[in-house]
Length: 255
Image (tube, rainbow, N blue to C red; front, side):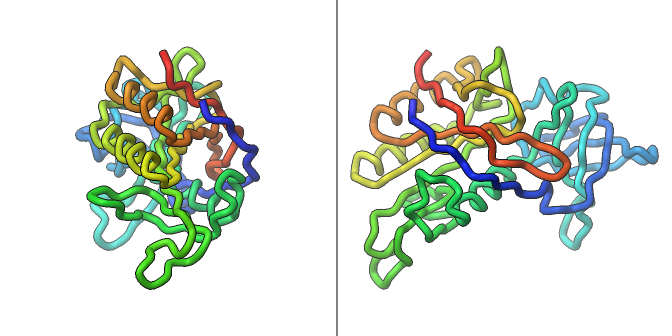
């Protein structure tokens, strides 16, 4: 379990600040799409970024929030922002955590990464691409991250809570496990690496692996923690105003 440092206050809007609409969930024809009824009675299709099973969230008549995002090249005019679980809004936008963490990194709001003023998205390392590459100096010719040792950061979206714990993943993730092991290899080679779990809701006392869903990921997370990959987690409550970087949480790596 990695010790956490206190975050600053950072909030980013839902669905890129698109107008938000209340809706009622009707069906999920495929992994990428939901059908919902707006308050005026019209039935619309909305793009769904979260590819997880969402069995506890996309239930009949669930109350949702959609973003209205018309535009050329889009198959739908709507994007699913979140769903209410009880009276709590839970994000179903798996891109939102990256936007939140990027804003926090660029603001120097995560003190464990504050020594890195240079933030690069989608960093290619070997055959894989990671969410962020951090550097204390800008890239120079012949050296991607300048004279400083880089830090590679991968972000994970968490939206489920069971028995008081925020649990990840919602579906088996071979890619996620591979990324963990690649981060561990970099850590052993002397590169600083970290995983940040963003709990996209206001509850959960810690982050734990959903071993029933993906026992291999559980084994990998425990292994990479021993090999030097830093693990962080934040409880990030949602409102219609956006998602806020909230309190740090422990990451549980053992059964």
